[in-house]
Image 1: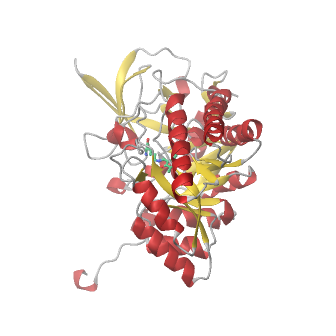
Image 2: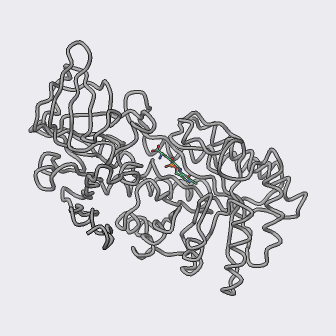
Length: 441
Ligand code: LLP
């Protein structure tokens, strides 16, 4: 499998996703709609799982970073594939539990977890909590003591590795709201703090250097720095980390500027990282840690396509042509937030050559509501079905009801069949929690 296998152009000249004609999907389910190819998601989960078996004797766990796309069906797939998940909120945790996910295989993150979220985690007996502040350690210890349990934890550390990616999605720089820096002694201080807590069992460390990263060296460097830190801690505090969670961040293809990686390439990322850990373990005479990774984007990103219908088309002579679709920043805020680039196609005319460059606009009342700028397309007409590729990660999960638009439904395609995994919203859903106080009536 490679990333394009989910997409084909069929005899009618239509885009096909996971064996289904995109035009048929649009006719049956309407637009806008998020379409996910189940086979792609499973394949990526297996790629990472098998790589840990092949290169590390199975001494580790793949967690799907569910912030990339959280809904009950995706947790159900992860469960069947025998991997774990990471969650970052009570909502993600609740969704995973409701989907029947094994709580022991859930890791919880967050730089400011709410007490209610920690309580939900403990009451569901989740496997591991990644502690990110002194305050959190104190609260968690107390909550665990109240319940008469000892909670497994990791500490999020910040090895100070700069990865080449958008500054908002870099997380392990020294100036970050996440984690304890190794360089200023905070990570060591926090280790000593957690080791004193009777109701917390420190298993090791977590770091995550950022997202949409292609340089293997960034991952290798982070792993080396964390292992060096483990060696220092062993010497100073007599604590040897059993678990190392190295985060996610592996990049995906969005457009011509990105490499198109194959599963073998993702396996290679992991192998390089594992080689670095093995070498450092030998250098410092450390035990080989239980290795946890947390890919999100690379599992679901290229598995997803958003389908829209083209509506208004506006040409400003000599300046720009806007092709407006029935979605926008409410289903995909990534251009507005990060100027992210996407590949755009006409799904019903997928064989036709691109003859012009257009900007794809959404339907929100704001000029910045764009999905893509200056992208090549055949001459679009109202009623065409537009496909925006690689929208599986951080699209639905960052969607909103801005302008009281509906968050689109999501469907899962498998063996040429499609089913809802997230149903369409209704106007009643939008007003369900609204209350008009008596005096306003
Ligand atoms: N683990 C932790 C602790 C994370 O913070 C993240 C992503 C991941 C794992 C998964 O990283 P991935 O494999 O998906 O790169 N909204 C941004 C991305 C934010 C990523 C946040 N953390 C975007 O749309 O690009």
